[in-house]
Length: 93
Image 1 (cartoon, helix red, strand yellow):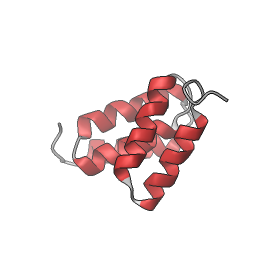
Image 2 (cartoon, one colour):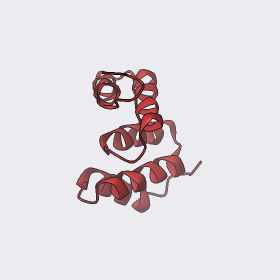
Image 3 (cartoon, helix red, strand yellow):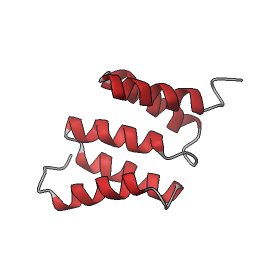
Image 4 (tube, helix red, strand yellow):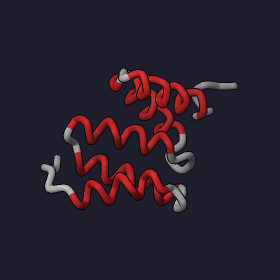
């Protein structure tokens, strides 16, 4: 499989790095998979949104979560995260 055209390995590695706490590597993996195909899969958006929240980049996180929901409307994780962001008085970037 061509890694430049197939998103699943990058998305999977992003999820592994995220769980291990390697946020920089996770972010790079999620960004790579979004660049390859922004219109499928939704976990990459949720993972990258979690990293953006951690960085204090709330507006970016909101955009990512909305795209996640657009790609997969049944995604409760993205809806829950977005609701928490909308309820919190956090700064936006």
